[in-house]
Amino acid sequence: MEFTLKYEGIIPTTSSRESRLVEKQQIRLEFHEQLRQLWSTHSRLRDINPKELQQPILKANRFDVNRPIVGGKDFFYRYAVGGFEFVPLVNTPQEVHCHLAIRLHARTGPGDIVFYGGDLDNRLKTIFDALRMPTGLAELPEMSPTEGQTVFCLLEDDRLITRLSIETFRLLKNVADNSYVEMDIDVTVRAVTPMMGTIDLLFP
Image (cartoon, rainbow, N blue to C red; front, top):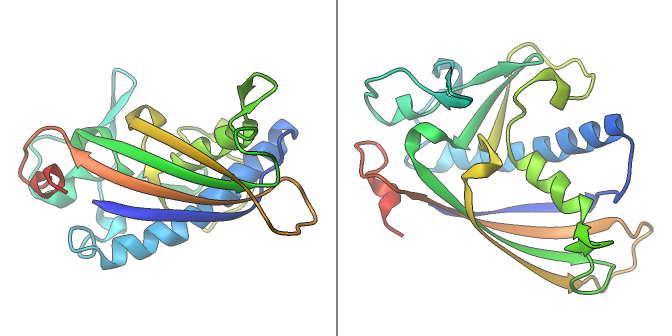
């Protein structure tokens, strides 16, 4: 499975903890809209009703689902926290790997966005957190969602990213805020173990 997620907007390099939580959730919801389109059109996903998905089981700090798994639908789950129900596309039960190729346009010079002050730039950390589902209230800002609101996420956990490339470009556009970025994230999802329901993910 291959597709591209896009983001255009402000990602501050520094902010308070609560502001960072708000920023991450806003970006997460932008990715949700794109992933919702994927779920509604992809042949493997379009017949799955997220409201009918099971709740996960936590085993050794990893999420799992009831066994035996019968059909492709049962590889997925919805995780309720803070009034939301998060549905990660890439999860542990499927035994899949996720490869990300990021093309990042920013006002800073090429390379500067990746390492800022000798450390990974906070904007990239924000993006990685926004790609995964939160696992507790401490990772969500104070807000009042519609109870049971579905949010599609790319990842259960960013540990499922097994390959990452980042290419940076100088943004040749006049913008009011130097924290503005434009980003394309090419996503490749590949199964590791042949299983009924994920066999199509073994091949390009």
